[in-house]
Image 1 (cartoon, one colour):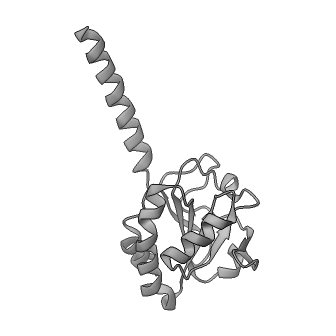
Image 2 (tube, one colour; image 1 turned 60 degrees about the vertical axis):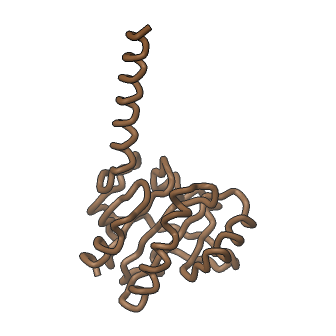
Length: 168
């Protein structure tokens, strides 16, 4: 019996270490090969009010592309930080494109209203998350003014402000 417990704890420890390795991955490439130094693929998506937006519209700005969902607890936790950072740096050439992977627009509208988000929130109706190789939420891409990826962050992006200061 104690061998089974030790074996189970060993498996649990390995699983935990693998999980932590994935969650703290902050600069590796995605399964599609996107990573630091690579150009961020352009895309077109619609905002909640139907306006079409493309990544190339923001060339010359530093852009945070954040893939998220309303049902994702870490996504909900990082949005207030993104809101504060956006307010602080939007006049210095910083933009956030929050790409919701939700399948219904109503929870997204409710979320945006509740959190009072004033940066563009896009609906991933064209499955851009696949183009970017998203495997977990939240996942963020920090893009420089030339359209190249500076950082890929899986999990809560707590260090966004310090990374942003280096790029702005």
